[in-house]
Length: 324
Ligand code: UT7
Image 1 (cartoon, protein in one colour):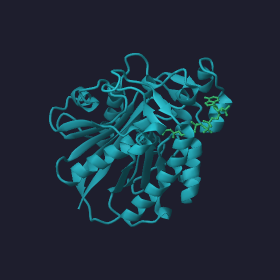
Image 2 (cartoon, helix red, strand yellow):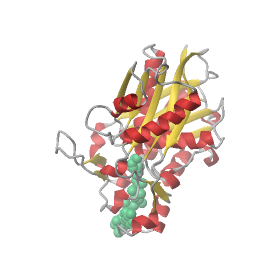
Image 3 (cartoon, helix red, strand yellow):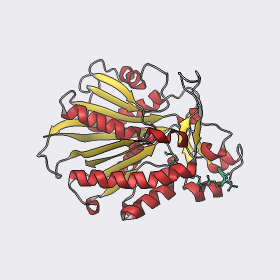
Image 4 (spheres, protein in one colour):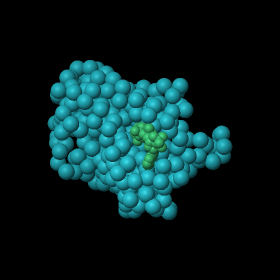
């Protein structure tokens, strides 16, 4: 049985750091409110000229170097999740492909907002397992700051920019849960929930990029229920128990959502990777950014069972179980 085994990961944050106090100088908010309601202390914001493809390139180079993969010869698939592409088209993935000097294979974007990385992992895993590609780069990259209304204190304090990437390679596995690689994935969406979280613009509707609009409480309520349920589904599908999970790497939207989801699932908080305090919500980049932090600091080790999950606009949500 073919398994998509993670060979390397990497991440990148734009250098400009913006603290809650910095934001409090621009909008009617306080560090106390932001920390108490979200757990966020600071976020990185892309400077002028920094694009999703540029952040993706930095993260990709690190992941490829760790994997020992030469993109000009060894890579045959890029799946890039973003809500803030460089252009309406071509896909940011093809811009990244060119920047990596890769002329073979295929590259495309997926759009599932904050769940984008889980969707991208699922698509890449499927293409590797059906033999369409052998080695894939999966990226989540966002310059979410570009679609924020910087006068709306209810949303602008919540988000940040960044990118994370992993390299997946098709390898023969035994077909058991002891295999390294992606063991199970599960995706969901419910388009009826558009009004709870959307952008009020687009190439078709307004000819502008628009700004993020969100009913925070509504999103919060669904997030805990949906993410806990999809975690249970993916664990059941793989035939393991929740107690076997070594690390939960959730989408980093709000510390209270992370705590509530872990509590609902009965997962030890010490097993939950948390970066929302430093990164805020980086949408599709949030899961691979958190993953890379926990790999680089030595928490996630070879053989560990890692469960990633996310939920975002659409609504979309999903989970991906990997043996590292
Ligand atoms: O990736 C998925 C996308 N998003 C999420 O997962 C976010 C989910 N939702 C949340 O994280 C939370 O709902 C928020 C952090 C957005 C808000 O927390 P809340 O506890 O639901 O607060 P609220 O929206 O009910 O607002 C409470 C009060 C309001 O004032 P009044 O009406 O009670 O007087 C807001 O106007 O807090 C006020 N408020 C603020 N005050 C200071 C809203 N934003 C701010 C702010 N600073 N930045």
